[in-house]
Length: 132
Image (cartoon, rainbow, N blue to C red; front, side, top):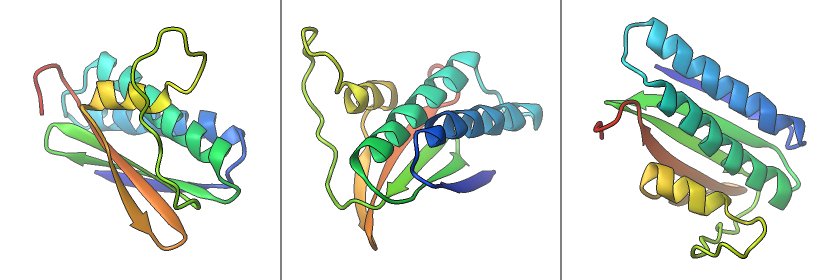
C-alpha cells in the first residue's frame, strides 16, 4: 500500500501531512495489517517533524510518500533544498531543534538522498513493537 501527496510548503502542510499519515495507517489497519496505536502516533510525529523542517528551511514545495514495506511504514519527505539536515546530539538545555533527533530515535536512523532540485529524507518505523 502506498500514498503520495505534494504540499505548497506553508505551515498548513504540517497538520495536513500528519493527517495524511494517520489516515493512511488507519486504512492499512482496516485492510487487515497489524498496526499498533503507538506506531500511528510515532509515525504522525515523524512526518510532522520532517515536514516542519521542510517548511522552515525551504521556500518551495514539498512532498510526502508513504509506503508499507514488510512490517514497517517507510516515510519519505522531499523538499526543494539540497541542504542536509543536521542531527544534533542530545542537549536537554537546547530549546528547539530536536526534530531530527526525534526521527533518529523513533526510526533507528534516517537516510538523505539528493534529488533534482532538492533532497529526500527517508525513515522507516515499525508497525508493531518487535517488528523490523
